[in-house]
Length: 407
Image 1 (cartoon, one colour):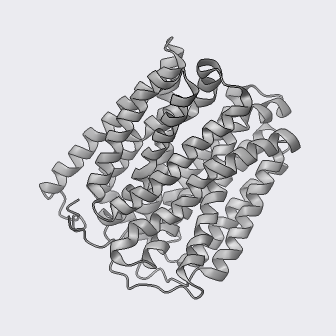
Image 2 (spheres, rainbow, N blue to C red):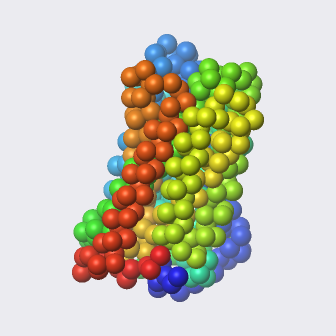
């Protein structure tokens, strides 16, 4: 099926090769992914050290997510005229500062503030990095270019998170944020050296604000917020499920979490390839896959081998990420930067919604493995919203819409 290109920008050539530019952008993804996901795995260590309860320390995750939700649109709207490379360097420097402040935080309140600061550049970084990667790729390979930027985020779940968890156990939780901060500084230096200069073009705050008038952008963000909450419903409670239901030893938990990370990496690459052929069919296929894999979680949780395979399958559901990212860039018209960044705000809403729905089920007496079927219901909700999006598009809803992709 046919697509309009994401943008009409001519192909940009990186001074030292697109490969090194993509690597620089992906290392930023590795830094952000490690910082975000490791925060969940080191919570008990942080709580013990700061003498706070686990639910109170859970606010550390919420503070970061709030930073993402607010930072993504605000930065991309108000700094719309900033050249792309300069914006990436600024965002990664801010991310490094947020994590180094986290490592130095003397107490609970200061740590919450530091995590909020670290969250602010998250969505904007991925949004701008996706646009830069797309600008360096041929029009029919742009989703694959976006998937390479997101590769760092998925690889973080294979290597970054287990390593960060091990570091926090051996050298204290502050060492985790210190390493993530150093990764942020490294990314900023690599972006300066390898990423080409890309002007903001005719972008402006007023033009970027126009994204909020586009119905398809809102519908796509709603589909992400609901449909991919399922993955997070399971991820949030997967460690206690492994310990109490699957009954594995604590040493096995990082290995099984890595299986999900491998699934995410495979899904991300395969999803990028499919998305270049059809955005809508890829999103639909990933949602159907999520329904099946999350439903299976209820039945596979009692055996370590079936659980390992199922966690890999659930991870593969992230195949939607490149498709949704490029879909938003397709429907955003001339407000692409803020649309690309809002995708990560939507994923953080999904994170919060999934964790809340899973927790609600458990609080009402459901078993830990019931988070799978709860997540599957959220994925079904995503399919319904996707159907609404397609219907609106076929009817030509919204005269201000960008040229529609046929899927």
